Length: 141
Image (cartoon, rainbow, N blue to C red; front, top):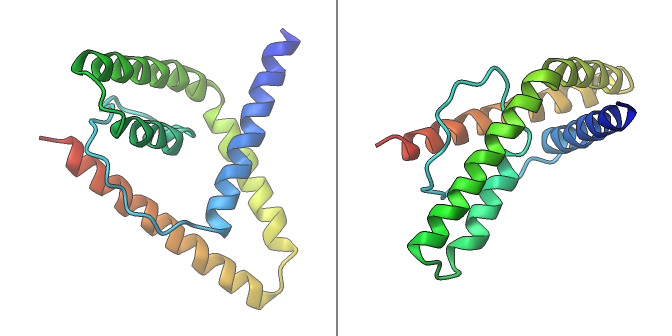
């Protein structure tokens, strides 16, 4: 049981670190993926979406057979389903922890730094929402 908590805590730390880095250092890359996305409802976004899209991009130029492509997509879909179950269990707590972390970081900033930080956060959220909208539009026939 302790090992399960270690995995959960490690996952939370990795997610928070990645999310925080994304807020501070957003990448200005538009999604070009035309791969279908999972359409099941999620209460929280999965923390590994970028990695999955990167994995899809890495396999695009490998001249995969149709059978290989289908099997890889099946593996990805199954992994997303497993991740979603885990994320539904820990997602709310991770997001609460990130809010606490973000608040603590903001408290360390000067008023000028806070304004810059908030502007970067707004841009990041806007870019993420527009990228998600574009991805969903591409995935929907």
